[in-house]
Every structure is written in C-alpha cells, then in structure tokens.
Amino acid sequence: MNKNAILILGGVILALVVVAVVRGGNRELPVVSTDTVQARDIVERVSASGKIQPEIEVKITAEVNGQIIDLPVKEGDVVEKGDLLVQLNPDIYEAALLRAEASLNSARSNLASARAQVAQGEANQFAAAKAFERAQTLLASKVISQAEFDQNEASFLTANANLTSAKESVRSAEFAIRSGEASLQEARDNLSRTTLVAPQAGVVTALSKEVGESVQGNGFTAGEVIMNVSDLSTMEVNVEVNESDIVRIHMDDEAEIEVDAYLGETFSGRVTEIGNTALNAGMNGFSMDQVTNFSVKIRLDRSSYMHLVEGDHDHETPFRPGMSATVDVLTARADRVLSAPIQAVASRASDTEEGEDTETELGVFLLVDGEAKWTAVETGIQDTKFVEIQGEVKEEDVLITGPYEIVSRSLKDGEAIETR
Image: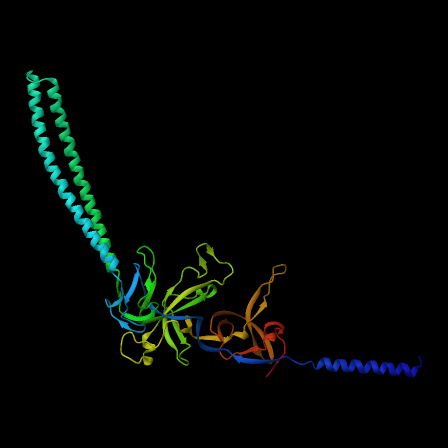
C-alpha cells in the first residue's frame, strides 16, 4: 500500500471517529410530562353494579291446594294490610270442617256414655263390695258354703274390673275429644288459608296467576308464588362486590348511585347489609371456577329522588324493581392531603446491605434543575386519579408523570430530561 492510500484511509477513520463523537455528544434527552404536588380532598371508592329492589318484599304463596275463584287486584295496585288478594275455592275445606265438627261431637257423646258407665260401674262395685263383706261374715259363721263365698268374691273382682275398664273408656274418650278438637282446628285453618290477605301495605309488583288457575300449597313447604307485595317507600340496590374490595366496605358507608334509566342523575344512599358468605357458596361447599363475590345492600335515600316522584303517596317511586344501577361506595376520605397523580408513583429497588435480597420502595421522580430526582414516599388512600403521598415532598414540587414506560422502568435518579 502506497503512502497516499494510507493517508486517505487514516482520514476516513478520523472522520468516522469525529462523527461518532459528535453524535454521541448530542444524545437525545428523554421528554417527559409533569405535574405538581397539590393538597386535595381524596375520596376512596369501591364501585359495583347491581339491581334495584324493594327493601321489604313479601311473596304471597298458597298454603293449600285449590283453584283461584277471585283475584281482585292486578299488578301495580296499591293495597293496605288486610286487603283481600286471592280467594281459593273453599268447597272441599268447608266439607272437611263439617266432618271434623261431626267427629268431635261423636267423641263428646262417647265421653258422656263412658262417664255413665263409670257411674254404673261404681254402683255395681259398691253392691259387690257389700255382698263380699257379708259373705266373709257368713263364711266365718259357717252359714254359707265355700262355693257361695267364692261366687261372691268373683262378683266383687268382676265389679272392680268393670269399673277400671269404664274409667279407661273415659280417658280414651277424652283423648278422642282432643284429637277431634285438633282436627277441627286444622280444618278451620285450612279453610281460612283459602282466603289470602295482604300481610302489609304495599304495591303488587308481580302477579303470576289468573282466575281459574289452580295452585299447589303445602303447610310444611313453600307453595306456589301467586304474587309479590312490595313496600316501595324504601328501595335498595343489591350489588356484588369482589372479595378484594369487600374488606374496605363498612356498615353505614355513604354511597353514590347512578341508575341507567335516569342519565345525569346521582342518588345518595348508605350501606345497610354486608354479606358474610360468598355468593358462590353452595350446599356442597364453594365453587372454585367462579369469581368470589359478596352481596352488599345499599338503601336509597328517599330525599335524593323525591324530585322525580309524581304523586304524594308513600309508595310512589321513580324506580321499578329490577332496574340496573351502578354504585360507588365511599369507603374512606382524606381532606387537604398532599397528593400526586397515580401514574407518577413508581417502584424502584432500595439500597440494601451487600448480600441481602433486593427490596423495592415506592417513590416519585421530582424535576430539579433539569434532572430527575428519586424521592421515596409512602402512599395512603387513592381515588381514580390521585393518591395520597407522604415523605420528603412539599406542595408545588414538580413531579414527572409520564410517559409510563419512562417513569416506571427506564428513568434513573439524576438523569437529565426535557419537558414537553
């Protein structure tokens, strides 16, 4: 290789080195977005969806079998306590009542006969006893024979036995009367069960039977449901809450409720019931392939929806059972606490002694003189946007909030940055 070629090659290499140095010196700085630490009111929420239902709803069921012959109410009617709801055909139950009354009267007649037999038996026993006493005296005086004495003794023992039998007949007749009275009461109860009346004031919210249909009832198990009577003056939302959130909900927590049928309206309520057992629990234990949720009931504050009520009746309500609703339960609140956007809080490895396992700590990156400064913080409650922070930060400190990839992974303490 001649001298000129060597000089040309050296010049090219020198040029490449210069370009590399220039480009390396002009490395682009990460561009980030920022926000400031501010004192805010933070409300922690647990969100869940569910259905609106009356707090008190009674299912009117048949206790006896029968055919509906009268149904004076229809769905949506307002009823008062004691109003007639359903009348079943009472014919067979009236006949059963007559049979029970006749059977009881027969038992009472048998008791009277048994008592008369006792009186007769007592008289016979008295006469036999006197005859037996005389026979004993006569036998001792050798006036009668042993055979005659034995006959008097046998008559006395027979009279005693007959009296005992008559007394037992009285007891049997008394038991028969008790049985007859029970049968009569049962017949009266069954006859009364053919007339179904409203157990409470409310509104007929469901009607599943019509006049002429037959219903099945049993006094020991639940019969067929004929209708529902609901107290619409107090409504509630029944929601399902995940197991990870249920521990944050407490009795009497405030709630904000949105009903799909009333867009733009927010109603208030309070937690009145928290389920103790998961909804996926069955007779044979828990179903492992289902999400574990718990039932929570929130009573709607009537004053928050009275502006939607058209009438002045206690049972007037703008809601219908089964409407869909979304609930935000306000589980915690902190007023005027230092807070940061949730995306500004990251996790980094903390300083540990050599040989110890690496631990992580939560913190934020502050923007100080064009550089990112890592500052460890402790977090408190949070809402959907902000989280409470405590540590070496103060109000109006500038936070690095994004992009997420830079804040959560690549950004280093002391690294130079540019802001948008």
